Image (cartoon, rainbow, N blue to C red; front, side):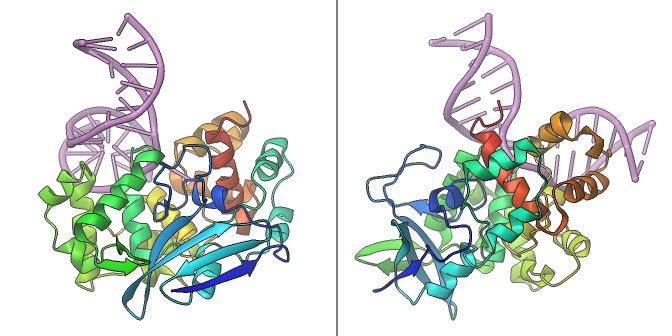
Length: 300
DNA sequence: TATCCAAGGTAAGTT
DNA sequence: AACTTACCTTGGATA
């Protein structure tokens, strides 16, 4: 086992691990205490786990936040991976400086200051957001855990057996019926067929990275079960497009209430308008703070 | 206790 | 291109 600690006091804008991992950005982490996300409180030890891959081999990583550090233990050297996955190198102050001064938005930043945008592995992020359609945030985690347990490669860590997130080939080999048994519902064929596309080399979500934003979003919608909203989630939470603003039910009702002039009818045009309104290149950050703030009753 | 409803939407079929 | 409708499942609300 390897271990380390990342200093947080020198980090611009600080860090809030719980807000980062429990704000509906990523469904690929879980709490060591076994409590569901949305339980509101930290467990007694505060550890969160996830898996990653190093040279194709699955690895387990766990982290917890202390006063001044992000402490980690893993089956591999995890410093660089954690910096990327948890957005630790982002300059939060510079990002916030680009956000509009509206009270609602500033209140959201104040409430969860230190929350960062994650960077999930592309395929796992894609699958998890396909699963997110019309699903409660608290249930999406469970579906990803079921997928791990049923199809993921086992990996030992600290005396326990965990499961890596399934590879495209592992999910492509699943049947729709298998996936429906895991309670994916109508998302089952979406996941199976998308996995098949990636496994067959027809397309790869990671290939969207580097394309201009709207082209990248268009590229992702070729996957089955991926519309513009899910594509925006993958761009924002996996591929580093911090300008992406997923138009979900929460942000849509926020637009109705606070930014009605941004409602342009179509997704593409409303997306442009709200992106502009929320500060352009970092609009996704404001959206993520707003989403978490509103979902937890802020702004009432 | 039974029924209803909406959840971080998308695909397929019409107009 | 814009507008309907069907779609799995389930926790929480309502009767």
